[in-house]
Image (cartoon, rainbow, N blue to C red):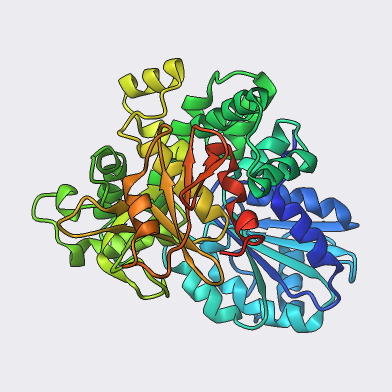
Amino acid sequence: MYLKRKLDDFLLEWKKSADRKPLIVKGARQIGKTESIKHFAANYENFVNINFVLEKKYKTICEDGYTVQDVIRNISRIDSEKKFVPGKTLILFDEIQDYPEIATSLKSFCIDRQFDVICSGSMLGINYKRIESNSVGYKSEFQMQSMDFEEFLWAMGYGSDVVGDLLSHMRSVTPFNQTDMNVFGSLFMDYCLLGGMPEVVRSFVEKGTFEGTLALQRSLIADYKEDIKKYVEGIDKTRVLNVFNSIPVQLAKENKKFQVSKVASGAKFKDYWGCVEWLNDAGMVNLCHCLHTPELPLKGNFEEKKYKIYFKDTGLLVANLDDESQEDLRANRNMNVYKGALYENIVAEILSKQGYELFYYKKENSTLEQDFFVRTKKTLVPVEVKAKAGTAKSLSTLVKSDAYPDITTGIKFSAGNVGFQNNIYTFPYFCAFLLKRYLSGVDF
């Protein structure tokens, strides 16, 4: 069963472009990169697929040079069955984090234009910096993540008309009927439990139950930890693992700011920041930086040593929950386990998948704290994550106070329906994936 992804349409448009460059599809492991590229390969008469992890013998194909002729000649020597038909061949260099040297050949492929080339891989550790420097100017990129809620709806059989209807409710501030609230609320809860890893989603869609999904999620966690051990270079692997293992514990706190001192006794920021950056570069986590003050511009307006760490895919957080929390979450559908950490993590994930950088605000010596911020062309928009319907004091303060002139309107996501009061728009959680599209059509 193939799961439709947003990469599919991008690849089709890329193929239509007369001046297309070799493409690098970036993203963490097991999010569906290779599967989507292989699905796209059906548009070609000939497909050459090389995986540098599974087929280590190909890690010599650039030894004679980086020209197209050098590379395809060496590939043919290793496997004479591989064909290279000019104008009709797609070449996939997969898992290139294990052979970054191949990136140097992309300039030659770009100039030659006889073959379409896609590179893919987990880009773990420092290797992507080498890949980027070796191919600058001669490649295009696509950043892929695990399935977002829209892709999950596609997997569940819903089309673009449903997404358009959800967006129209937001723009017209029209409440949903109870049937819609029940149906989409339940689908969103399923998505929160599953996360967006294709293997997990596919199992759920095919079986129609959660049977085996937790085991798959925990297997993915184990694979991620193995990748840390394999790919971390230049810093302490144990420290990176300790940071990764500490994330669920720290999200369970009332104050979810990540504290290095809680990772290990005597731990200091300077000793662990490289570990945090590595996890972020590897696509395993989302970093949410604390603003100095809630005002524009956002770039550079944050405190380097104050941040929260969320899992890039909420399914990974779910897999890390203790057995009691698992039972509460799955049996009672209680998303407020871990003091609302799941709500925050899923919204952080959803914002990141729309291309937003993540920022929060905590005023010193005050209860004023805001979960997230996004921006329109003119204003800064605070975003509140509320487990239940009700007032959001910090959000109201930011919107009303003259001390924050860049803020005129706020947005709150909760289990409640669509509404508007005191310059605060309220939307159900299942609408969060449409925030960027919604804000593109408003004037505030």
